[in-house]
Amino acid sequence: MGQITVEKNVGGIAGLCIITPAVHGDNRGYFMETYSQRDMAEAGLDIPFVQDNQSMSVKGVLRGLHFQKQFPQTKLVRAIKGSVFDVAVDLRADSETYGKWFGVLLTEENKKQFLIPKGFAHGFLVLSETAEFCYKCDDFYHPGDEGGLAWNDPEIGIEWPELTGNYAGTASAEGYALSDGTPLNLSEKDQKWLGLKDTFRF
Image (cartoon, rainbow, N blue to C red; front, side, top):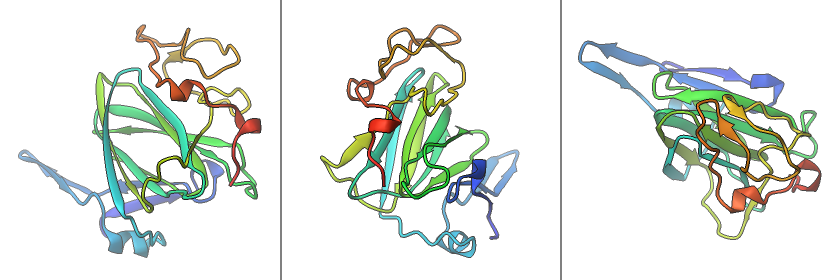
């Protein structure tokens, strides 16, 4: 593993990994390998990625928690601009950590990557003025196959940083804001997902 370090089973959840690339910098700037199939395979992560995605979001946007039901995806995610708090929730029915979550701060400065296997719901909250977010997937997006999980389900209890508000029984963003007053911003669809007890299991 010449160009990456891998922390496996983070948060005590099997399969979740934080990957940190080696960054080579001087007064001109820096260079790093953002993905190496060889280094990943040497770390025991031999994953055939087939699609790269990129999104831009403004401060206060929360995207998630999403998954694909019949065509689940392994994802390798990172922030290339700004900062996001990235979360995965274990939805594997036979897992000892079913329903458990883990979150990691991904920023353009720390350059960390988060590997999320199949069987997890995934989402992130934007903490910077804007954020550009990239992720590799090992299966293609299939329209109509998307599922979701309420981002604020108290049964899961995700501790979103800088976020204040009171749970009112739904995934609505109403009444939630970041500590600087920026309102929480969710899509209409993401405000309708149900909690863990009513959610798809893998």
